[in-house]
Picture 1 (spheres, rainbow, N blue to C red):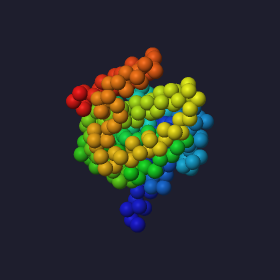
Picture 2 (cartoon, rainbow, N blue to C red):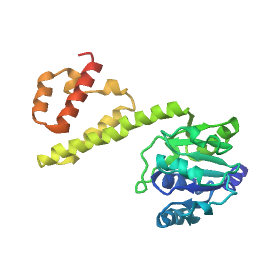
Picture 3 (cartoon, one colour):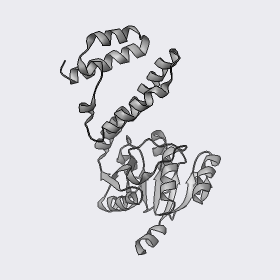
Picture 4 (cartoon, one colour):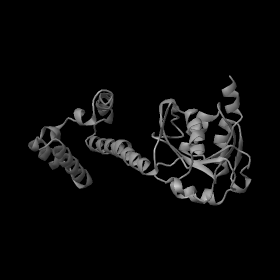
Length: 261
């Protein structure tokens, strides 16, 4: 199809070779022409470059000047340095951070934006990006239009969001993913100390997540705090110490307040 042929001619440089860069590059490789993968570690760049069939580089001075899109997919603290140490051209430049505002590019690039995926991405667990929600922001109407076309090549779920809204989305993601996973870690430690298997929790975790397909988190909340069962909560607290005890009490108090106890 004509649209596909045009899209394949778009040249992309990936500045980064980590979790986000890997998932983005693999999602793009059949739709855009990825010409370079940059990493401070040449071996890391080579691993990803081999997967998408392009050049690996470890020197920002080697970044080509004629690509259409430059994707900065590195740690937040390194974004500004990448911008400052690469050439300026009229291509679309974007970063993939949830918390770094768009104005990190201001005065340094003409066309720029953000394309942030709400997903936990890993090199070792490649995600099908089609259904991942991508939140974009462009500095001009033209940049936003280009970003929409770019993001739509990766996912069916593309939304516009300001830097402020993206920060809030990132905070919400930390609660929903990072903090939830730490709860799994604490659960595993409680069980391990008693010689019990964490596998026993997996059906419970699966059911808890599946309920969110047809219930709000507030509606699906269960447990002693949701019932206001102080006696059970105190019994549980007596079996815990240190951080686990403090976290259990803090979360139980929050749930009870939310339930009106």
